[in-house]
Length: 434
Image 1 (spheres, rainbow, N blue to C red):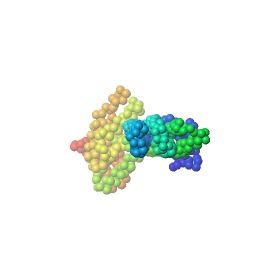
Image 2 (tube, helix red, strand yellow):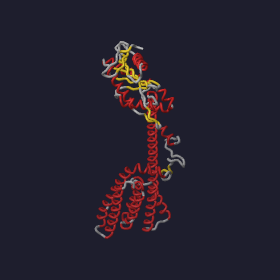
Image 3 (cartoon, rainbow, N blue to C red):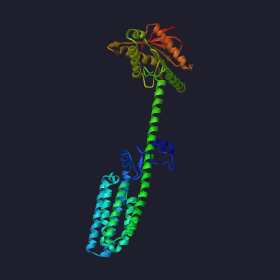
């Protein structure tokens, strides 16, 4: 799985498999600032992590504001309610208000946490204000230096910010410190170099630590996006395969012209219904329909007109037979309908009503008004019949008898082998088998 994700991202092989890509790639990371070179990708990453970053920033800012105010206590103990203390207190309260204002803005607009601009502005205000401690409390200079070093490293590892912004703020803070120390006492060149190196140590340490974290975070984001893309691709493939399987199923089971079951499908369904009828001891009948003089329609109006007629007849089958009935196209202009739980004469009555509906229906085709009729042969499943073919042959035999004796009629295949014209309540006499 890991190799697949690397291949999707184009990550080169290496000890960790997480090296950034070359320039021009969507996932290329600029080394010094640990951000994606592609602006849209970087914006996507910032949007992805903005709520998490906002929570971390609020925690850091809240801690900063509390510490700012708490340190006013040792100032008061050392200085009393003096003018220098009041100046330091005003500084602390002012910075705390700026921090609280930023917190309120981040709560309302979490995307500010990932932008870095306003976080950096508040940090610069805090660092500039902190320089007052060097002036107003020179007696604790050694503690002030230590606090400055801690603040410089905290800019990278405690306060969430863009790496380039944190680096800029820390360098400005180091310059502030050098300026204040140089102003308070005359530094020799050697002392100045040592102080610069001491200030550089937390900056370098914090920068490297933050760089590693931000690089890893973005590489994990890239792998996550690759995993999602892979999942989406797999989901699409599954959907396409499902659609293909459905299309193949329809192609294998549905007549493409009429939308009814083709011979292969209705034979399978018929066999299932026959087994159920045997098991439950219920009647089952089969109706075979054949359009009368259909060849004349093809000859007089063309095969397109014939196809339209077949589609219309199929639609009438769907509308006039029950949902449990199984309709299919036998071939050419022949249709077949299996009717579960239906005895012979009940099926004959349904077939008779269907032929009446068919005769009354006008089929519109390119300005023509076509009418068709059909002959139906009906057979009921007998106790000794184990195969569908036997039932089909008896229905076909009755259908042929109807064709021979006038068409547009329903013929019943009686159990004794004879055929009878079904006319509803008034039944014609039996006709000998043909």
